[in-house]
Amino acid sequence: MATGESVGAGRPGGAYAELCGLARRWGTLKAVHDLVSWDQETYMPPGAAASRSEQVAMLSEMLHEQRTGGRVGELIAACESDPDIAGTPDSDVGANVREFRRDFDRATRIPTALVGELAKTASLAAEAWKQARSASDFSSFAPWLEKMMRLSRDKAACLLPCTPAAKEPYDALLDEYEPGMTGAGIDAIFTPLRPRLSGLIAELARSPRKPDTAILGATIPAERQHSFGHTVLGAIGFDLHAGRLDTTTHPFCSGFGPGDTRLTTRYREERFTDALYGTMHEAGHGMYEQGLPKAAHLGQPAADAISLGIHESQSRMWENFVGRSREFWVWALPLARAVFRPALEHADVEGMYRAVNTASPSLIRVEADEATYNLHVMIRFQIERALIAGSLPVRDVPATWNRLYKDYLGVDVPDDRRGCLQDVHWSFGLVGYFPTYTLGNLYAAQFWETINRSLPDLRAQMSRGEFGPLRAWLNTNIHAHGRRDRADELCRRLTGRPLSADPLMRHLEGKLRPIYGV
Ligand code: ZN
Image (cartoon, rainbow, N blue to C red):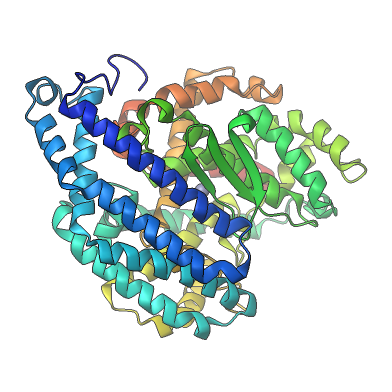
């Protein structure tokens, strides 16, 4: 924790100290679980898929048993009746106990057998997804998706009674990633946002002054991109002594524990910005993980991120608000030119800035621009909510997907590989996860306005490659506090208002209209 009393200082032998000791054990076990999962997504040979699914299932069950043991419940109850803790609910210790309770109540609702089955199915389904995706064959993945959705509905049914805000089963799943948020709440944000985004995208599409993106098409070998990625990581402040950058099919970040945060990216030789922005994105997640007080509070809520929306706000901030700024390219272009020689010899800052800030409807979410990205998310939200409600059969997913892409983005989906098989999430049972991406964009924009008021010199600093003040601001105001605040509380505390779509629209319109001359 950042200031004041130290969580974990509980009286020696007291309930709180014992609870934190148990948390350290499951935090350590979780690090092992995450390492094994990371390996599956990076270096594991396909032949290990079946045995790995058993390993992951066993570790998940062990973890679940540790976190739901009777002693954990007794210790939480003892902390709640300790007047020193109960009397200070807003203290670091009080907030930590509140979150221990939330985790315990949710975890104990789910039978260990279901935890194991979910983990095993997810591990196998992810392998089936990889093959289905490369063969562009939805029918081979459909039985796995069917099973994963059935298990997710079972999980939702378990969690529904301890999700106070829930109105539908989907809410119980969403609450896992974005505590307190509901499908109706997401709807209330997405419904008015969609026409604002579509209006801007249409306005830009009509402009005759489109940015020239030819400069991004230079062929640059993966090793050189990797080397440039490392330079950027070091400069923005991702600690490479306590982390790594590897390659994968579907980029992600995994923070195992103190001193070990793994980033992954993928390289496309004819579009170096894919890996660059993928790396900066994951580094935003990675710096959040590195900034959490894990060494002191491993396994405790005090060492966890607030929500996926807040996590995503960090990744999107570094990717888009920093990485796609003119100031970033003032600093980065000479470095990129040196590493990529002779590829960017004729590039200038203004050209790069314009090239990386296009907005046009496309098929692939992870490669989408800042403006159209959120429409990709809205489509997934609509589909997964209907899948959990049972109003959309799995067999109808491809047709629904394709229809929504036409409707939201005006594009025709040529095959399932570039359609409903492009994302890994559902195979892993990550349902309720997608909307947090757009929440992250909204939070990032709102935080960015506040940060620029707090750090008036920020833009000049970025153009000199000085990212330390920004990183320190994020660390002091967000990372160091673990799960002390809920996402909406954090937003009000930092920006003085609840989450709004206005800052994101101001950011997009303020940047894209001048670039497109509209
Ligand atoms: Zn992300």
